[in-house]
Length: 288
Image 1 (tube, rainbow, N blue to C red):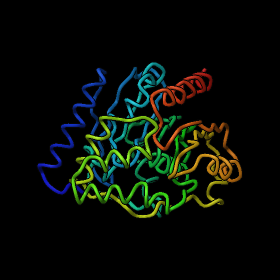
Image 2: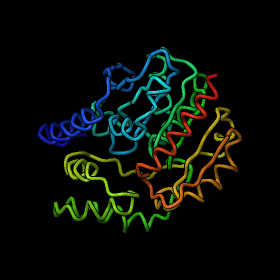
Image 3: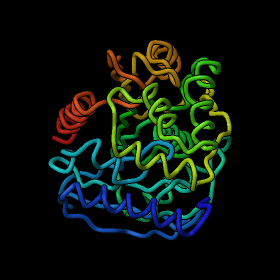
C-alpha cells in the first residue's frame, strides 16, 4: 500500500507524533490474525469495561484516541489500526462486499479475550462495526456510529467535484491548496494535522477508491445489538437526514439517533465531545 519506504517512514513519523501529543499511558498490542498483523493501542484501566474504537479511511488509531480523548475514564480502550490504511497494521486490503471485515474484527475480539464489548467508530469505522455485527454479534454489547459508511451514500456528483477532483489535482500538482479545498468540504473545522497527514497519504499511499456499499435491509433487520447513531447534517458523503430516515426503517435495534447540526462529514472538537459524553453516559448506565 505504501509507495516507497521514504513515504512510509514520513507517514509513520506523523503517526508517532500524534500519539506522543496525546500524553497518555498506552501499550502496543500486536495480533497475528488470519487477515494479517493487526496493531492495537490499548489504554485505560483494565478493570473497566472494554471498548473498541475504529478510525475512518486514511486514518490511524492515534486519531481515534484523540477524537474521544476521555473514554479512558470509563473504559479500557482498544484503538485498532485498520488493515490496509496508512498506519502500523498489515497492508492487506479486505473486501467491503463480503464479511471479511466482520471476521477480522471478531478474531481480534477473540484474541483480546474480551466479552460484552462496546464499539465506537467513525465513517469507514462504522462500516467495519456493522460488518462485525452481521458476522457475529454475540460478544458485542452496543455500538456507537458517527457519520458511518454503509447505511446511505450521498450524491456522487457532489463527491466528484468537491472531493475527488481536488484530490486528483493535488496529486498532479502537489499544491497544498487543493488538499485544503478537499478538506474544507469534509471537515467541519480546519484541521492542521489532517492537512499534513493527507498531503503525504495522497502522494505516498495506494488509497481504495472502490464504491462504498450499503447494508442490505434484510441483514440490518437481523441485528439485535443496540445501535446509537450520530449523523452529520451537512455530510456530502453520507447525508445525515437521509441516513437517519433509512436507519429508522431498517434497524430494529436502533436505540438513539442524533442529527449533528452544522456538522460536515468530520465532526469538530465540540461535536466529538458531545458524542463522547453520550458514550460515557449511556455506557455507564448499561454497566451498572
